[in-house]
Length: 129
Image (cartoon, rainbow, N blue to C red; front, side, top):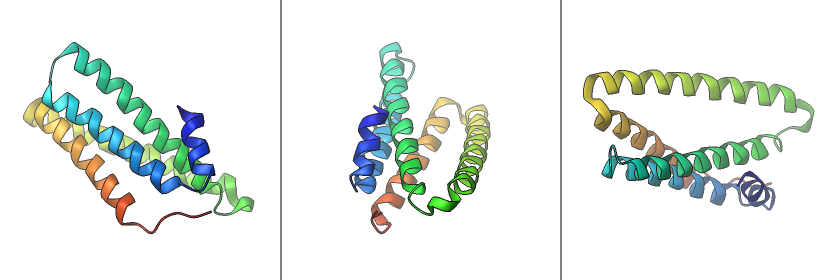
């Protein structure tokens, strides 16, 4: 799926690609929240979540590489470092929420983060190349 979303971002529609990919991520979390512990729901969630997160990553990389061609390495370093720190912090918080409130709290946190991403994409000025 990465080439499809990369092409969409390259054609000047990164905002549309981000809106779709973050919505797909939220959909996957909702499936898991509605059908907790169901093996088929876990499979569907894993597949949709992977597609949504990878599509977001590919789109973000495509966008940041258009910012300053002379600083691609530095921009990529800042992006990937931020991405890693955000992922580690999110994982830590999700584990703490799971320990405190189980699957319901953990998936609610995931859904909240996905909704925040969708709102951010929807309210931010469209990215143009």
